[in-house]
Figure 1 (cartoon, rainbow, N blue to C red):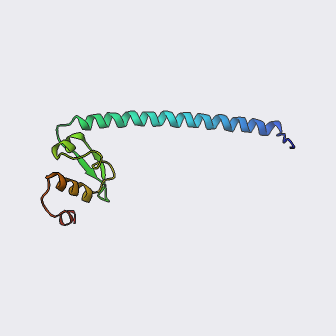
Figure 2: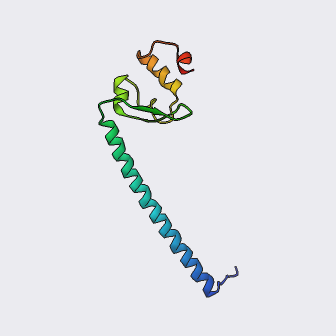
Figure 3: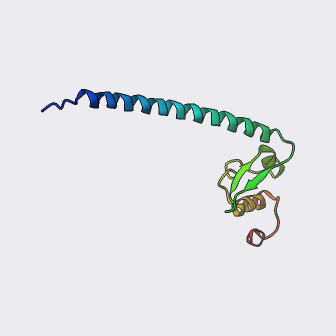
Length: 108
């Protein structure tokens, strides 16, 4: 198999690019870790509120809810989580006995 030799300049650039890539990955990992720390703090604050909280996006999907909201309506955290639709939530509330109306009519 023939070997390929790179000119010294190309090798230097390769080492520089590899070094910059590693630095970028380390920075991204650090930033992700810090964001995770902030998310954990916000989650702790929300879960320690005495009021129940459930917020939706424009597509009626849950973006955030706290533990107290689940407790108030005896809801499952496996169902009522970010991404759950309003219709899925109301259907689950009906199954737990905390909603007695028509799910479709309510969601309209």
